[in-house]
Image 1 (cartoon, rainbow, N blue to C red):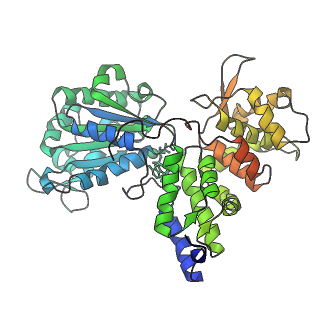
Image 2 (cartoon, rainbow, N blue to C red):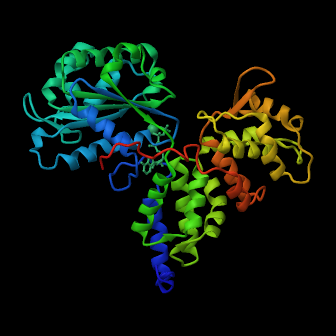
Image 3 (cartoon, rainbow, N blue to C red):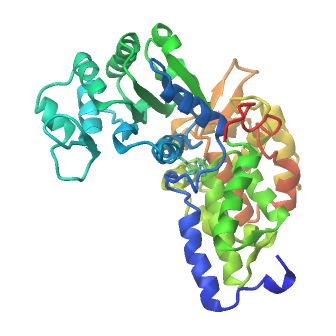
Length: 438
Ligand SMILES: Nc1ncnc2c1ncn2[C@@H]1O[C@H](COP(=O)(O)OP(=O)(O)OP(=O)(O)O)[C@@H](O)[C@H]1O
Ligand SMILES: [Mg+2]
């Protein structure tokens, strides 16, 4: 961008871009279009391979907020794009529903089949809203839907994909029925793909009796997003808004995001608006740091509540806020894949937060213990033996919020965060593995 183009031509243009920023950066909504979706090439390839291979199903699992629903959402537009040459009847039917805690196997399938409408007397299916009877009503009326009912029905749909999101909410016994269904569909070579999506560290934690179906399941692990993938989210915003992030501004947003795209969208949106309010098309590091106050106030309510509960104190000079900030910085530097850190590694960050105070582990040992108690959330959890405890944040979305809050309340400076915080725990890994597609 030339220097001459750096300002918006008019105040109205800047206002329009500020408004558009709310459509391009979506901190609280899963992405549902191919255009706004960034990265995740390896996961997309694995999913499409599972979809195209009869007998193979998929499980998408990872931490909260890493982008699982967004991946599940783009299956449908992606298939539509890839199959645009095919006749309508030959295209795959794709349905995604959220599982609920109280769902039985039958209720979950009823909701999934409610998404499809019967077009003619028997064959032909349309997405919901076309006025015809839903598939669930047409086939099952009020009856309980069993594994065998589903096995008999699915072949009449042709190639299809059914995604059950938030699958971790299902009760164990009901989740087990899905394992049995996968086994059955695989044995009968039915060309429907079941995709189970949920918060979990391993497939075993999500799929009951996983061992019995492991050959029929493609494991799609969703790690935190790679810095390159997060930069791609900002680049899409730049392109659509006709604006530009200065390199240090983009780097700082990526660093603050810690691989969690929610924060890339949240900070990206507010930093963009900050630049618009100056009439500038160029988003600077100063815009980013000025945006933290607004961004923290717009963060997810559950995060704000958990943070307030953890740090509240009647004493003005209590250390809870500072210790938690040091923990958040330490978590970003953790080399542990699961985000655990030792108390000893909190010392240096806390010295940076409180340069005038003598800091030893004893200074904050009790604070760490309290952070693991109900009265302060618990915001942290701990593992290991006494004398060798390791801690981590229970909510992975918390550390970036704590750091953002520290910045907006001048508890720490941007250059200190730049120096101390690592860009991502997965800094050194490749974003896409080696799978070449897309
Ligand atoms: N590939 C992506 N490209 C761009 N933005 C993304 C991508 N994946 C996720 N996001 C954004 O990140 C945020 C979280 O995404 P999403 O809701 O899909 O995560 P999730 O893993 O399903 O979360 P939860 O565990 O809470 O269900 C949303 O703001 C979404 O827009
Ligand atoms: Mg989700």
